[in-house]
Length: 392
Image (cartoon, rainbow, N blue to C red; front, top):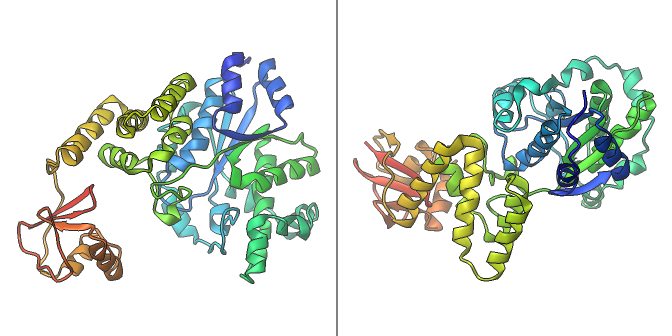
């Protein structure tokens, strides 16, 4: 069946938020020919939440789907246990099978906020990776040299720092590459940090007498603290965040990320994105532009109703300084602030609670307090701008 060969849409597909395309001329030719391609994206379930950093690649996958191509989403239940260190400055620990299963429980539901699930081909890579034996793995490993692996910047840096690098880490690119063989990928999408692994897929496909996949890498986006968005750093905007929380997180992000978010996390026409960029350069209040951005992103995941609720909550609580209509309640017998912060999960630990108090991030009944403050029934504890607990 022929696909949509709208040249304008294909051009945007190959450029919007894209860092690199290998081989560009070949992929463009295939897209313009109407050939239906198999487009691969793999995601390891290293945490229970998909976030906007992951959604960046998922939205590109959806762009291919909208053009009529067969998209293939691989949940890395096997590779998730092994651990990819492509973007890590230290060794990523192995995860247990139980932890991976727990993490990926809602992945299909979360991906369905972006993709047309009925038209999506899903796989778990344990389907084929768990069946490989030492002989076949050795044949795959023979394709690559150790020099190729240690040429990667993060690996070179770790070697210089004399940090441990396990042999397990050398095997990960083989596994991701073999995923492409298993599903006969024509194109693989991934972040810029995945370049080595995706290129490995081309070589492994050639070893198995398949045509090497084309590659499309998307740029990485910053999280709420300015670093790369990553679950391990806790700076994520998650797809399952409530409309109110999602809206608030976007509004709290650095003004500098706004245009990147428009490009990568929405499908507002690029002409409008450029207009927003011009407005900002001309001195328009960044908050007003960010309100448009937050509303659009929340709409993608929660619809018109969610976008409206998120905006109304933000205006009420943060602009008008009112308390939210609904505040979670905590019944506790402790009067110790540090203990209550941990019990309410406003803090991860006692040391985290003390840090929050020292940074003046905690208020009781609207007033900044110190660690010696006593908690009583009816108090409203506030962490930052978005989190509230009422003591009962």
